[in-house]
Image (cartoon, rainbow over all chains, first blue to last red; front, side):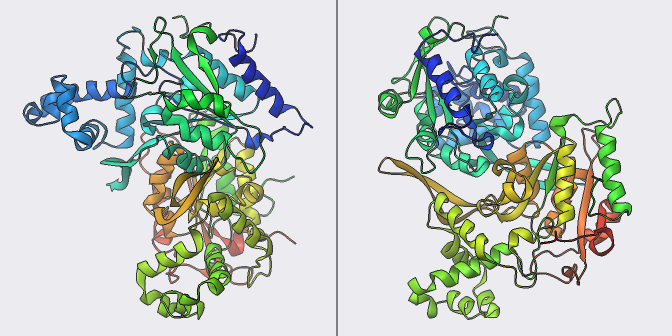
Length: 309
Length: 309
């Protein structure tokens, strides 16, 4: 099979294959040993669709509605009242404290095993409102091929996402071929306890780490412990990890940065600078040429966006 | 070559090889698929010598002495004054706050790259005071063989230690064959910053996570995202991760727990219940028979402790 079949033969694809050829050519000065072939991928908007809101926000909405009958007090207390009424302005009025309360109500209080099952059950039936397919099929075919292509060239692929790590791990191995220990994301505080002779880990209602922006290189260092040589993102949330991967390397390794630019309003969604709630790409559009990051124009660079069903 | 050549043919070795045979026998009910063959190892006292004090404490001592000429104020302020005078009672009098100050003075304030180099340089020249060899050669030969044996049976091996993750990653790949992203440990807070066009991560003087006791299953969940089927420790600091690995599994997977009991005062050090500062094994001695954890008697189960030099 041809390399990266869902990519058109444009400069973006050429840049990818040139980089891989360069770091895998034994004996060349740019050769990178296998254990240093680390590639990091953002998830929302890079590997799967994040519009009109990130998938995990859909999950939180559905979960809130499912739990509402057990919480009559939510009908009269903020931010639950506004959220259940679909009044985002009302939710926003409750600020970060309100957002944290919504996250805690939907993501905490259960064991890690229970949470995994809740996510698994939800993914099995939920459908993307515009695309009409399961979220796990709202993944970008060209990026799946890119993951495979890098692994075929003995890269180790990691996800580094602002999304919840225990949310992503439910599907990342099956959908992306990325095992749980190579999925890095935001974390909730968790504690260990014995229930009789059975140990459990309980998800507590408190954020442990928000894995976005300058948090991404921090978590790359904490979890991977080695500087990636390739980084793939789509928003300014990925800016610092693109910088960490590609700028001022004291080890002299070649590196590669790529930004997926959402230009295809017909096959997917078109958004960048003006989209402030999530997935905003503003600084990145200006910095890509300056730092040599490849800008993928989804409309012209991708033959296919989503796999046929 | 024979399996586990530095292990005597006793019950401990038999238990290990029986377990591995059991989970790797295709078609059997106990067969465990490759991606679930996760084995976790404590480091201090399990993979390398932790007596008379843990290696990282020797590092902190040496680093404090190296930095002292630049800090004349340490001669008159606690806990530095007591520490430099070798007065542990004086250090202890400053409590957890004092310990934190010593850790910060020796482990924080530099970039992650600089810290790695400091550790590398130290390991290159430092020698264990009793064993007279580099710390990276004060590793247990039977455990190195066990790591290799598990990997040959397609286990993925992780270190889960109370030690500093960036300290261990300097040598873990070369010495244990465990790559940086499979080394889990205590972490210090770190922040990202740009110095001109060069991104750096700076180690801040604050603990991020102490990876010991009930913290171990928490970090296993956070970093690995999957329950191990085999766990190797030597102290009560490993108790909760042994429990998490072996007790009340809802997935029905077979599991294995092992505790290295330091019984050999001649070839190494003999200590257990009474040794309270680090490496105390008290509850574990009582619980091992109850929970079916294998107790390794170093004196009789190990043919060799350290590799010949």
